[in-house]
Amino acid sequence: MSRPVRIGVQLQPQHAPHYGLIRDAVRRCEDIGVDIVFNWDHFYPLYGDPEGAHFECWTMLGAIAEQTERVELGALVTGGGYRNPDLLADMARTVDHISDGRLILGIGAGWFQKDYDQYGYEFGTAGSRLALLKESMARISDRLAKLNPQPVRDIPILIGGGGEKKTLRLVAQYADIWHSFSDVDVLQRKIGILGEHCAEVGTDPTAIEKSVAWPGLDQADAYRDAGVTLFTVSSGGPDYDMGQIQEAVAWRDRANQR
Image (cartoon, rainbow, N blue to C red):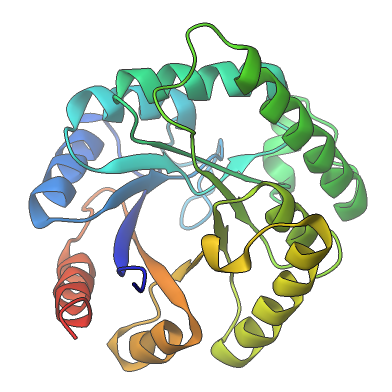
C-alpha cells in the first residue's frame, strides 16, 4: 500500500509581536486539517527586519503540544549545534510525552551564522558542523534508549539537507523522514544515492518518507510521482495567512483519493 500524502505547515516564529498570534495560527492550522505543525530553530528572523520579533523553538513546541490534540509537531529543523545532544534527546522525550506521542524530532547541521555568533556557538565550517551532527545523532539515539520514562513512541527522526556523501549517509542510518531542497530531477537522483547508502547500512529506503517544501499546485503532482509524500507550506507573522495551506490540504485530499 502506498504511503498517503501529508501536509505540514511551518509557522515561522518571526515578526509576531506577541505569542497569541502564533497560538491562533496553530489553532487555525489544526482546524483546516494539516497533518503536522512545524516551526524552525533560529534566534533571529530570516526574512524582513533582521532584528524583528522572534521566539525560541523548543519552548514553543511544548506549548503547541499542550494546545493541540491531533497534529504532529516538530522543528523544521533543530540546529544541530545549538544544544547538548543528550539534553536535546531529553527535551524531545518530554515534548513527546506532553503531546502523547506526536513529536517529530527534526534536525540538521545548521547554517545561519548570525545565530551562532550572537548566541556564542562556534560556527566552524560546513564540514565541522556535519561532523558534529554525526556525533550528535549517535548520542541522541543512545540517550533516548536510556531515558526513564521512555518516549511514548519511537520518536520519528527528520533530517534536513542534501549533501550526498555525509548528510544522506546520516539519513540512511537514522532518519524516518528526509527533507530535501532539490528540484524534481535532482531529487530523483539523490533518492537513488540515498538508496545506495541504505544498502550499505542495511536499512530500507522505502521506509524513509521523502519531504519537500510546498512547490505549488503546478509542481505538486510531479514531486508526488517522484516519491514525495510530505509537503510543507510556510507561513510567517504577523498575519499567518492560510490561503496556500488550504490549497495544499485540498490537493492532498484529492491526491489521496486517486
